[in-house]
Length: 361
Ligand code: F6P
Image (tube, rainbow, N blue to C red; front, top):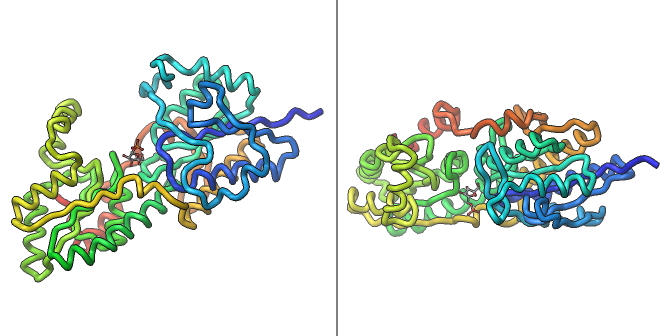
């Protein structure tokens, strides 16, 4: 009898919209094209693979989940030493345990869905000898090798909606509003949502901001009769002063910072410099919650089915990406090699400047 094709699915790192749509894409396509697929869903990311905690997934498990937020498998952030090891709860190298689960289940391939860190850790699984295909998911859109990730567009929709709503109250009270959006390292989400919602100032990690110049931009607006200002700030935005510090010095400065996040610091500095009342809104994990938008449903489904096709063709070691509108396999070693920052000459940055959005520099 023909041996069945055995697949493990892992969702790892921070969740986002579209994970279930992607899981569904993988499962439906495998059951559609193979009459002998066996799929094991690992619970809570790498933890399930390490501890052998998984669910045998039947065809019906892949129905009714397209629009569901989060991940039906659960996820976790596993401790990890960059480029070296995935660690278990006790801080030990988890590779032997993961390999044990992989071998015991006799898996042909693991499909790993995750962000930047997960692409890097999945590469360690490949180096250890596992067959792996990854899918790029994150609201941050900072994964190298793909024009976009699923989750991103849904988060842009939410962040845009938040700023849309803030406009009226900011205008009524003639206040400065600092809206802090997610994005530790990259400003894709903040720039997209900022342009979509007509924010007046957009501050992103890739362009260190000068707070004095931000205050001047606000003053200039007031002189033109525009009495309120919306500042969209990525959580990882840095001032020109902090940008020149070493990573260690920056960490120490952050620990000493009296404000809980960057947006509170910016609001308080702008209040002192401009004399105008400032308020902060932090939508936080709200940006990662709820159903995927239609774009992400389609993209995640395309990524999932493309992964299934590679599995059927026995081609492993790739991340599925989208480049110029085409779904393509990207060698995992490339995808895992670096972070996709927003280039300073990106056309959307030019567009933002063209319409008078101040970028802090
Ligand atoms: O990487 C996605 C992301 O949402 C970042 O934008 C944010 O900094 C981080 O995850 C938050 O992580 P956690 O879920 O661990 O709070």
